[in-house]
Amino acid sequence: MTDTIDMANMLFENISLTPEDYEKKYPARNLKEGTVVTRFAPSPTGLLHFGGLFAAFIGRIAASDGVFYLRIEDTDKKREIENGVQMIIDGLNAFGINIDEGVVSRNEEKGEYGPYTQSKRTEIYQAFVKRLVEQGLAYPCFMTEEEIAEIRKAQEEEKLLPGIYGEYAKYRDITAGEAKRLIDEGREYVVRLKSPGRPGGRIKFKDMIKGDIEMDENILDVVLLKKDGTPTYHFAHAVDDHLMRTTHVIRGDEWISSVPIHLQLFRVCGFKPVKYVHISPILKEENGGKRKLSKRKNPEAALSYYEEQGYPKGAVWEYLLTLANSNYEEWRKCNRGADTGKFPFSFTKMSKAGALFDLAKLNDISKTYISTLNAEEVFDMAAKWAKEYDNDLYSLLAEDEEYALAIFAIERGGKKPRKDIAKWTDVRDYIAYFYSELWNRQRDFAENVPNDEIVKILTRYTEIYDPDGAPEDWFPAVRQMSVDLGYAASPKEYKASPEDYKGHVGDVSGVIRAAVTGRRNTPDLYEIMQVLGGTETLRRIDEAIENIK
Image (tube, rainbow, N blue to C red; front, top):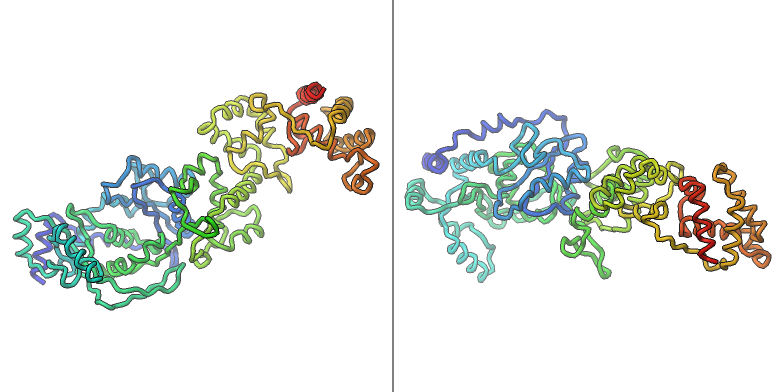
């Protein structure tokens, strides 16, 4: 014991604080039993993608009444990208995933359990490794990369577990004196765990999604501190999750294979183990099968896709909930208009195999979401998006805000609002016929109405059109006009005896619709003409007549 204490003091002569000091500095949180404390802990080594957003989203809703914090795991400085931290923060903010603690900007943190950036916590990790060395549970290893490569080659040839353990851990029992001599010679070293695992040993743990899992116990003497004194991911995350008083670790299921190492680290350090929640990857259908959503193959794997296309964050949030829990859609049907925070999220309702990504479903959800917004909300969101991604559209919207609001107010707010807009990229086409700068003035008249009839219908309509007429009077007037021109007053009437009519009132109103908007399918035509105004409406009808003649 004296030798290991000497070893610890020699290796960590500058470390004066002890694990007990940090336990006092970061006490147990004053939260009621069962409260979830979890984190999103990305590395700033690449852009945040949809899978990462989903994991962060699960953490946020799981800790809706607890604590959700952002920790930056930046110990791999070689792979770190410029502005990587800020891009992660911006990605979370863009989709409404708010944090309670942690890194809030490139140079700012909030919370009592920081620093929340691993590169700022090196002395904390070293204090805990020092204690392990004192206890004979860790040791300095001076093996060279060449030696390790030779060992791995021999292990592969003999079909043995690759790694440093047992007879391959040549410095496992090194003395303080031997270590000092090698250090004085200028030899570099890492600090390894002296694994207490036994060959053939098994561990069991319960995953909150996967259920009970049994695996081989870890026997590897894994690296705790690298040559530069910084921690490995395995060790740093164990110390951080303990000191930040994390209750649930939510991460991708590719980390299941590392659980034996992580649980062993918790045990040797004397920490209470966390609860593990391993999320299956988001899947994509392809050629009759399924595969992981790919950053290389699928543009929708990148978060920038949703921002550029203009999906509202509220719609993405709704869609993520359908991926998270299989019962969300049924809950939403029974709780229309309710805040998503009232949904009783459960880990047990998450897919063990992996949720299936469906872009068409996202579009449907987004259409429904946007249909529930009022005109002001649609204008604000669309204009904000256009300012970033479509300057010409933004100029039109901003030039006459009142006019744009009137457009967005059409058929909005009723019991059955239209669902024409799935994302803000749809707005340009949706409003095109209201703006001369966007409308190509082409008119899509139905083939079943000949040109001479189109002229008759439009000419007659200019005679009865009343721009100041009440909405309840508009269609009856068109119906009567239709009857006067030889058309049935209803599709049902026409279907009963088509030989008696030229068509029905729907054909007549369709001609007017195409003349005014260029389209066969639009929101309420009366409301459209009210927004355009009487002068513009008549001008368009006259133009259509002239074009046909």
